[in-house]
Length: 614
Image 1 (cartoon, rainbow, N blue to C red):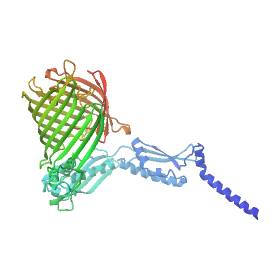
Image 2: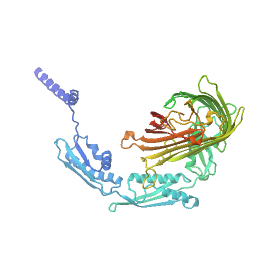
Image 3: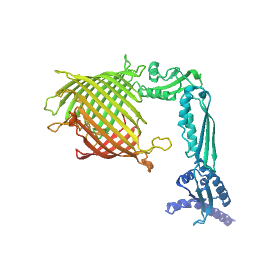
Image 4: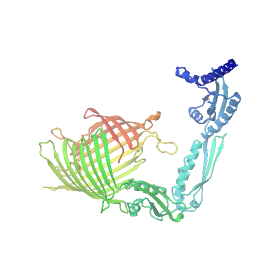
C-alpha cells in the first residue's frame, strides 16, 4: 500500500515539474542566449504604393490578429475576406473608390507560419468636379454680408479639380464653418453636406449648406478676475465698444493687447451666445500678474560673451500708478543700468514714458561712458509702433586711461515709426517690415550747433515656391531674406556729437564675419570710431532641411553681408562677410548659427543669436 502511495506522489511531481519546465523553458533559453522565436498566426506582405502601404499598415484590422497563435485556417480565411472590404473602405478615405484588391495565401519557407499577401492597385484618385455652397438664415438678407459670403467661398480649400479625400473634405467643412462664425454669426451651423461620388468617372460632387443664425452685436464687458487694476484700464486695452458687430478677430486682438500689457498672466475673451444677440455681453476672464517681480537672467553671445542681468518690475507704483522697470545688465562689452516709468494707456493706447540710463561700453576702439534721459509718448500695436520723445544724450570718451575725456552733450526731438507685415511674429517665413527714425536737435556746452539724424531700416522674406491651387507659399519652400539699413547725421564738420547719435556696424545681427561694432571710421592711428553715415545690406538664402524627421525644424542658409560707416558719403567702402549657417525653430524664436568669413578681416568668425524682433 505504501509503495502505491509513493508511486502516485512520484507521478504527480513529475507532471508538475514538466508543466513548470514548459512555462519556464523560453525564459531559460533566453538566459542561455538561445533565440526565442515569437509565435505568430501569419505574416502579411502588402504590395502597394508607399502612401497606401503606410495607410494599411496603420489601420488594417487584419494585423490585429497576427498575435493569435491558435488562429485556425478557416478563421484566417474569414479574416482575409473581411480584410478585402476593410482595404476598400480605407482606400475610399484617400479618394480611391475603384481600386484593384487581391488577397491570397502564399507558400512559406517555414511550414509552421502561414503567409498572406495583399496586393493593391489604387488606380487614379477621385477629383472634385463641382462644389455647391448654399447660405441660409439672416446672412442672406443683409447686404453688408456679401463680402463675407464671397470670402468663405474663396477660402474653400477643396476646390474644383482637387483630389478628394475624407480628411480634406472634413477640413474644408470645418474651415467654412469657422469662417462663418468668426464674423457676425458665432452660432452658425452646417445643416446639410453631401459628397456624391462617381466611382466610374472618379468624380466627386460636393455640396454644403451653412445656416448663419442671428447676427450678434457686442454688449458691455463682463470682467472677472480683476482685483488690483480698475476696469477703466481693461476697457481701454480691450477697445471693444458696445454696439459693434461681433468679429472674432477683434476679440483675439483685444485679448493679445491685455496679455502684451504685462498686467495679466492669462486672458480669455469670449462672447455670451446665450444672451440677446443685439446686446451680447463680452466675457473677459483674467489672471493678474504679481504686483512686483524680480527676474535674473544668464546668457551668452558670440558678440559680447557671457551676460548677466537683473530686472525688477513694479506694475503699480504708489500714488502715480505707473509701471517701473529697472534693469542692470553686464557683459564683456557693455555695462548698463537703466529704469523706465510707463503710464497706463489712454483710450487710443498711447502711454507717457520717461526713462534714464547709465552705460559703459566699448564703441569701436574707445571706452565710452554715456548718460541718457528720455521723455515722451509711445503707442505699440501688433503691426504699427509709434514713438515721439525728447532726449538728452551725454557721452565721455577716452582712447586710453591717460588721455583726457572728450565730453559731448546733445538735446534732440525724435519720432520713430515701425510697420510690420509678417506671417508670424516670432518665426516669419514671408512678409516685410519697415522702420524709420527721424530726429533733430542741438549740441550743448560752449557752442550750440544744430544737427539732424535719419535712420531707415527694412527686412523682407520672399518665398521661392507657391502652391498651385491657392498661390500660398509652400510650407517647405526655400526663401530669400533681405535686410537693409541706411543712416545719416547732417551737421557741420566741426560739430562734436555723443557717440549714441552716430553709427557703427558689425556683429551677429548686422555684418557677420566681423566683431560687434567693429566696422566704423578708421582713424590715422588705426583706431575705430563711430561715423555719421551708415549703409548696410544682407542677402540670405534659407532652405528647410527635409526628408529627415528629426531635422524638420532646421534650415540651412547661405548669405552675404556688406556694410560701411564713414564721415562722408563718398568715403563709404563696404566690408563684406560671406558664410553658411543653420536655423532651428526654437520655442522662443529662431536659433541662428552662422560661420562667416570677413573678407577685409581675413578670418572666420562664429555667430550665435536667438530670437526675432523688428
